[in-house]
Amino acid sequence: MRIIVCIKQVPGSTQVEIDEKNGTLKRDGVESKLNPYDLYALETAMRLKEEHSASVAVLTMGPPQCEEAVREAFMMGADSGFILSDRRFGGADVLATSYTLAQGIRRIGDFDLIICGKQTTDGDTAQVGAELAEFLGIPHVTNVCRIHAVNTEKITVDMDMPAHIETSDVDFPCLITVEKGIFEPRLPSYKLKLATVDRAINWLTLDDLPDRDAGHYGLNGSPTQVKRIFPPDTHQEHIMLEGEGAELGDRLFELLNDNKFLQKL
Picture 1 (cartoon, one colour):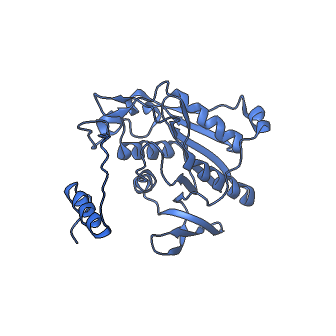
Picture 2 (cartoon, helix red, strand yellow):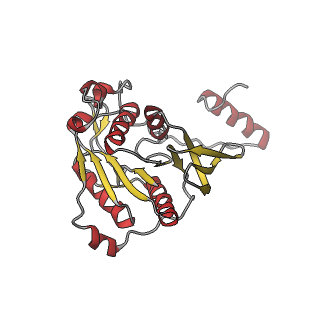
Picture 3 (tube, one colour):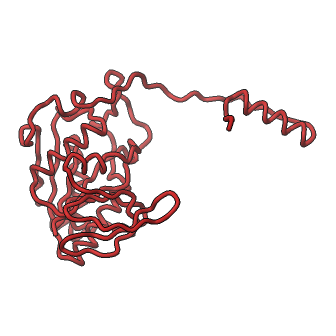
């Protein structure tokens, strides 16, 4: 079984700067960490590797500093790593990011299973996994909370739906996004750190991909356009209400209604 895990390096702090010109995060030189949701994707891949003798490759996209995320994945047991890094990928929205990852996977070659975390902590869109699968033309299941069985043809999983748990059989090749708690992520291994310190990482640029049209990547390939970025309003005003219960209830209702916290049914 050949598994690809998509990972991402995200800002390690809420104190990040925004490029006012194009409305994107400034990532170069920012203190970063591996996206917490991706730890569950990595752990899922490691469990499948141990149980089914699978090979695990990790794929990420970002500036050169995201090599740290790939090295961390090596310390958790990943076998190989690929980094999509090119200035022409910069400023990508979820659609352009998904397309770039899809092209990277086509460049990597054959696979049976792609595993993604549920979402990232910097974007919180939870869209890349499904869009990636659509670009690759493969079946996909999101919000996977349990894996029941795996054989040479398919994987059987539980999906955490809003009102129930749904069990599905998904034929290979396919993509799944996993929930927090599907497994407890392992800690990086110091022994694996020493063993993989010189392991080569595969760096890919636009010129290495099947589709080399720069108009499909980065800001050029992003239909989402940020019009304006501004900090949220802060309100320091405090209101003290005094009176009897019924009177206080009426006045509180009026305040909530006047500030549009209430909606008519």
